[in-house]
Length: 254
Image 1 (cartoon, helix red, strand yellow):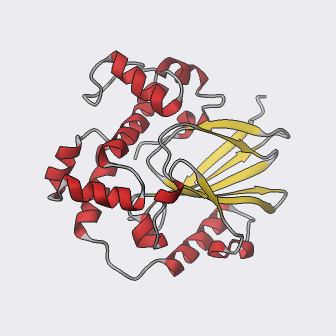
Image 2 (cartoon, rainbow, N blue to C red):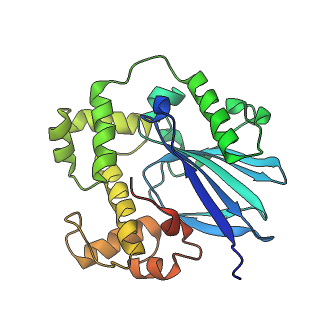
């Protein structure tokens, strides 16, 4: 019998938070050694905490990433995370995250009242997490332009040009860039490139190592863009997806 080295689960947010949160996850290291993983940019920023022996040992928020990061899950430890989308800085947290672009910020255990969580099950953690997020959420309606922007970006996976995005939501490219730079620290074009690479991971996982959509000019462009965001060629990602590139194994279609 093959002994599993890790496990992974996701829970989708409740209806009240689905406009600002993509999902909650738990990744468990089932071994007695640290688990070193390479994580790729996925167009979300996160709130994450690690638990070992029933205690929170690390708690932080990441900004948006545009290239790969190496993380280490503690021995017999669990990583819990919340993926937040482009509307979350303004309409959930009430502040920008551009100041932690490509980096992370340590959080106090009192943030979102984490110190009081019942850590006995993933479901209970998500229930408590959502309660605290709803408590801090600003009481203002999401601007229609910004909601259309978010919905379009996550529906099309970066396969539109910046001008096409602007045309479809009736919001100028300049206004979109100003908004994304203000809260996330990136332009629309750069954000679309991150999304496009993320969508390509699904194809790479299936062994499709050449561009499968019009988002890439040719094979050389495809390889160059994937390597820029992950540090590896499509071939290397495919060959290592069940090892340290475990994100490819767990990624799901939006």
